[in-house]
Structures are given as C-alpha cells and as structure tokens.
Length: 114
Ligand SMILES: [Zn+2]
Image (cartoon, rainbow, N blue to C red; front, side, top):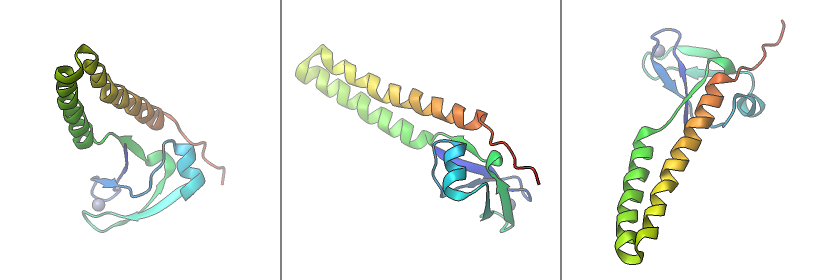
C-alpha cells in the first residue's frame, strides 16, 4: 500500500515517500505533521497525519496476481490439483492489504490542543 495526501493548492494527490502501516506508526516515525512539496504545482504543503490516506498499488497487485495464476496453472500440470491452492495466496494478500488500507483510512489521530 502507498500513502497519499492531497495538495491544498491544486487538489492533486501527492505520493508520500514515507511508509507506515497505521497513522499511529506514521506519527511515531515522522511526527504529527509533515511538510512536502507538490510535484504538480510546487506548492509546499504542511499536512497533518489525519490528512494522509492509503491506497493499494493495483499495478503490483495485478502483476503478482497474474504471476501466481500462471504458477498455479503450471503447478496444476506438474503436481496436480493441489497446485490450485497457490492461487489463494495472492488473493489472501490482496484482501489483507485492503483490510489494512481500510484501517489506515478509518483511524484518526487525536489532535493536540493548542
Ligand atoms: Zn499542487
């Protein structure tokens, strides 16, 4: 999964280099607010952790899915029916990722009182 935020000037999505599986982890590692430059309009944005959202990387999901389908078919011919079991691996990974994406987007960091 990839982390994004929206540029406050041009409203395009900015991809974050930082990685975290939860907002709490993000806050712990990178602080409550991060500063980043929009790659579309160059505006410098200061974003609160709660403004960050997660999306899956469909490109890689599809690629890994395609590869394991091919592998399963191959294994089906080599070792028989049990080879089909391998097809469930990417499905489970995709579902697992989707679950953590939903958890990430639903959770909110309580804002500090100023
Ligand atoms: Zn922008």
